[in-house]
Every structure is written in structure tokens, then in C-alpha cells.
Image (cartoon, rainbow, N blue to C red; front, top):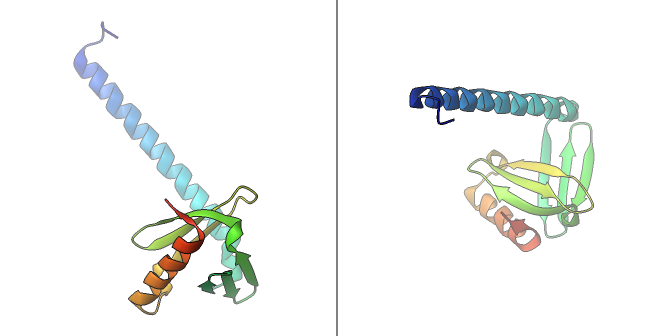
Length: 119
């Protein structure tokens, strides 16, 4: 590497980073499309959470999930993302736009803090 001129090394690094970023973005988009194709048939869903767990009621399906299914959660500006525990490889996404009031988001955050580890 000592024989390569500095501009050549810099250009090579920029190309490698660009290709890696493009590949990662493409992979994430493909994964998102696949996940959407799995959940799309269920239609719009409404989720209600309390200290026992979460109940999701959709146009074609309804299910109850106990908090033990999840181990931890993380919060983004638009979502709560629940991550599966040891016995289940689960993932749930709770959009904040579904809250009718900003206080509802705070209540959900408090429920999640009591039942799951925050990342």
C-alpha cells in the first residue's frame, strides 16, 4: 500500500464506501418490500397496549401479544420498534402517528419502559 499514490487510495476508498452504501440500501429496501408483502393482506390495524401486552385488531385478523415475546425496544422520531426476546424472533413496529394525542405517546412510552428494556 506504500507504493500507491495518495489520490489513488482516496479514490479507491470513496468507491468502496459508495458501493457498500448502495448495496446496504438496496438490501434494506428489498427487505422492507418483502416484509410489507407479508403484512399487507391483513389491512389496516389498530393496536391497544397495556401492562399485560398488546392487542392488534385488523380488517382480517386479530392477535394478542404478551410483553414476554419482546425483550427490548427502541424509539425513533416516528416509531417504537419492539425487538424479540430469547424464545421468539419477533419484531413489531408501532407508528406514533396512530396516537390521537401526544399524551398517548407518553403513556405508551411509560408502558414500554415498565415492561421492556429501552435501547
